[in-house]
Length: 374
Image 1 (cartoon, rainbow, N blue to C red):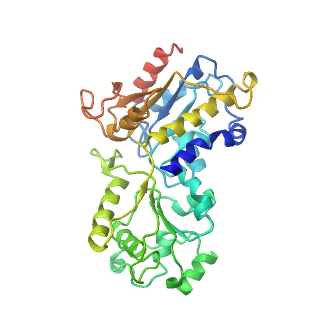
Image 2: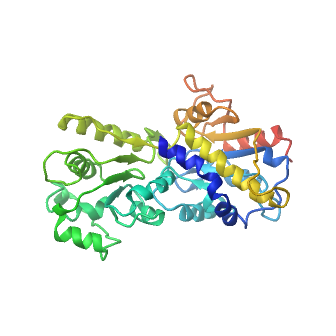
Image 3: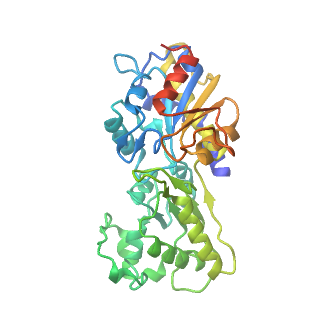
């Protein structure tokens, strides 16, 4: 939690960096538009897999001028991840048909950047689909290995390996840390584990994580103090292409915790990031302010504040998007769509949104009418 706080509070120090990165964004955001901003969830709101839904391309186009400049500040606030923010921005640009910048993409693992000072030079393991080790390397971690790479250094660590038909692709096969680990895997101590996205091989990953966590980072050795464990998010379920929602990172955490607690004298210790943590929404507000301030640079002095009357969170998961926005409080206004996890006819009972709509296009139309933006 303290790290999330740092992530949100560091914004003033990074303002000049962010301003430079956003210099190619619109300088046409008017004073009415910057009185509000929008945060979009992705899966279940804008996309099902790689397929746009709910009129999302048309909805996002309305946030730009006819010449393609951004006129309404917005970000993507998602618990998803597994790839670097610039790569995800490029993917979203192609899928949604609008120009999206990396700083507009806030992923579940984005706060891991703040842990570089602590673990940047130490051996850490990154798990999840996509490119977890590449993400951590881009953040500045110098000795990070994927679970695929790490497990491949230990003979027989995965008792089911012989039954698996896929092969490991070591993107760092020539790295010094991997070479050293393969020469003597038991001599290297894992200092921390980061789960960036949904793990692919649950049986192996739970087995090896239990080995790492209950031995102080030295699989095969005696029981010792658990190394730090970080989850990019704790979503139990999410909406993908299949009609019913799929189990997410939170489900994996529950499975790991149940098994670890059954074989270790002390309960599993971990830190979870992502929505619905209120400080995630605070960070999104900070980023939206940088977008607005940069676009109004000609009339704002460096360091001058930009306050929003309203910030809209558009999401499909009441337990994540809506709960988080409600906990964050003013100026957040929550809008729940029926295109993802939530499919109810009425509002959600436990975590009711400020408004319920069918699609993201309907949500954007409501926002622009409410804010008197044509």
